[in-house]
Amino acid sequence: MGHDRHAFADAKMNNVDPLAWLTQTLVRMANGWPAQDIDTLMPWNFESSWSANRLR
Image (tube, rainbow, N blue to C red; front, side):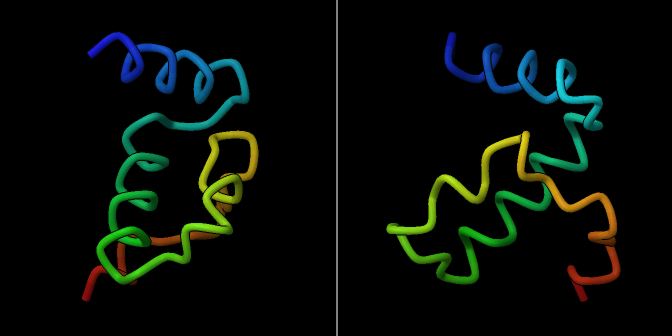
């Protein structure tokens, strides 16, 4: 639980909407994101151009 709070704090510190970042991360993981590229999912690597339309 505590790690979740750190991730949201990191998102906010990087001027990233925490909900948008979490949504993008969970969708990517559910779609089989490769474990060796997990660092790409960190808030400071968030793609702000990512859209909720990719959920469809």
